[in-house]
Length: 261
Length: 209
Image (tube, rainbow over all chains, first blue to last red; front, side, top):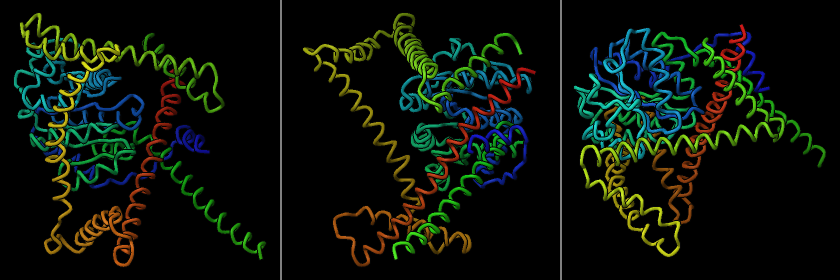
């Protein structure tokens, strides 16, 4: 039944309304408030297994950044797939905004031990990433001429499916004061609402719903908005099954009580 | 679509369907896909670490930039491998102790300064200086939720009387939190299925036309 509820909306598309949460609106407003041509970081801290939830967030953020003419530094603390996903997404979207690698964006790739990486970049990004993802020394990349450490970075958008988001808060935001917005999988979203309330995150996207909200705000209808049709249908199905199960339990319970008398 | 893109799409579709075949029962196609994934991941990870750590952060800085003092962390790293020989296993404790010390130092500060204190500060909200009754209500919920949940985990006194009532309120807050987590988890797992189905219908079947 769940399988059918997922497949049917792709064959017969139905638009379900997607309301915007204050946390997603905060992400949008924070990027909108950035001065044009700001230097921003887009962090691909998710594994390929959670592409369905995380990639729409990263794509939409990139559209949003480039619409504001921001210069984007991508990196990853995830060894399996992180750097390649950053490469694919940036190179696919760049021609739409006429962006050039090395001038408008750079992919630093992956480096092991994220705690040391996040702390070390506060001192010097080049000491942690001597080269970009393709092996080009950072000294030969024009965009990195003006970037030494977090001081030159105006905004960080962390897309994560694991606990690395905690360290962006505890190391980068707490010690260097860089504003961070976060897009996380639905499984970990409840934990991070507390960080929004405390002002440690300037916004939060939770799972496919969060990604769909952001796509809607940016005006780039992507896979998350399309996927929300199936998501809503499955949720309706689950709620119905829970209700039917409970009604059945109470009805058969009464019958059982009657029999025992 | 170029030839390589079509091949890539078919390869992804094959492995997606191979893994889905487990829904029927354990079978050789599923096993093949599972083993290829495990082998590829391990190989990729070893190659990546070799390039980004050993070559970029140890070998090149030493041989090209002349930073020979990096030999010290390099040797410390290799000492970890002494765990494989029983007689000199103890040597691996030296780099391990170093790692533990540094990690504890970094974490102590970052966790306290970045997580514990800001979260505590955000819990101590002034009741008389809020923005409207709605916010006042939310503030009261936060304060009551935190205190009652903490009391639930206070086991030095029997949960009777006022303490017991507060602990019961704490259980309600914990249950509501579990419910929210479970709801989000369901959404997350369904999203993963949606992602695969979306790929199969839009990208794979879509490539036939």
